[in-house]
Length: 212
Image (tube, rainbow, N blue to C red; front, side):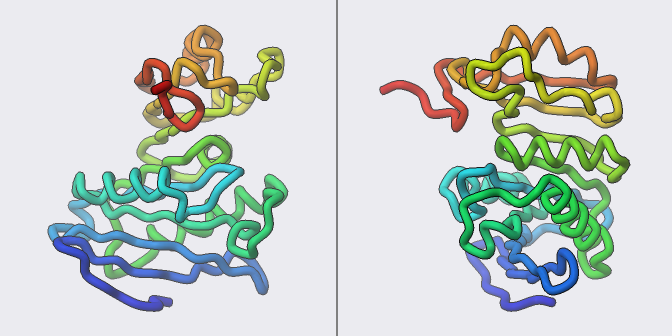
């Protein structure tokens, strides 16, 4: 299961291969703070967006930041990026991957966390929200740029599953995000029953980049 362990400062980095389905595996990176203790501590899993993989600087930044905050921080590849393909997997495969990773973390006897949070960049967050709506246990969702709608198509919102989400949610959204009209997002947030927090990045685009 574990493929190697290294230590960076007060962080331990483990690389794990996770079985998704028959003959399909993917890679994950687990960053474990030195002070992490099973059961009393929390974990967060981070999924990449459609156009990059878990090694993208955006992903690495948040992955490390979560660990520095004291959480067991895990990032993973979806099967298509693991295989070097550009086109995302079918939604059912993406969802199955999320479930497999979450179940692997929660069933790991040595580091089973007390609470589990799911986070994702764009597509990764949207798929996380779908599997939670379908019943995957979760203590909170973090959206690093939720893709509310396709560019310039605000009539095609991706919120039909939101009423089935019953955990706290945090949205980080840029004001220049072409995939998320902020006024529209705010009007739809009441569909989420539990506490909702929206943090706005002034001038940020879909990847939080701001004009120079």
